[in-house]
Image (cartoon, rainbow, N blue to C red; front, side, top):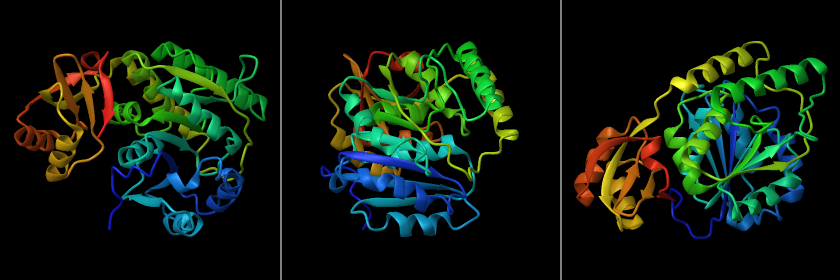
Length: 317
């Protein structure tokens, strides 16, 4: 039986994107294990997204996380990128608080509970490895490259965070879903796009200082990945984030939307409520699903951009 998408016992979802991580999942879990009780493991689910791996990542994920009470391994049919994997994990998340972390748990897991608790006063909490306003890596070359990339992020997005690429971020589920539905960057620069969209939507973002360890064995290609990230950054100022929506009554119930969504075989939606109406936001390739949902709840289908969502209350379905 598939997990209940509205299970009230799930408070937190930990999303773990993984590409060819069969050799590092067990070591990452060992770093996490001492802090599982702090996460209240009985009410936390772990969603491991195998991003089209060519090794035994999915099988190893089932072996490593199989002893936990709530876990789900989802497989992408092909490798799409970290951003696509995180968006998929967020789409199936059941917890009202979502934590996205790297498979190697390089960010010290002792910080995870505090980041989740910070969501009492923010929509998005970004782990930050920067200290005294500077981000330093284990080598001078990587440190300089990191600072150059951060300047490019500021230039193309207006985002002022010093560390946008930290491998630990916490979200409220509604805003996380909305960022996932709007996002278009599949690769490693997805973080910069998320922060850009958060700024445009007026979401509250906090930076939370973390410590980290440089864990060997990453599948990131240090030559090609930065070039791809810069290419993605350069497209962001020209990107139009436009999605199909169903316009419904302002008081439309989440239950009726969820029922209609199941009938249309779509998931991972949000309701963006305003004073006069509610917009049910779908992914950009779910126009047919939008038509089905509109027919079921008596709504109308149109599209909206980011500006049309500003100031609305965001609720995950």
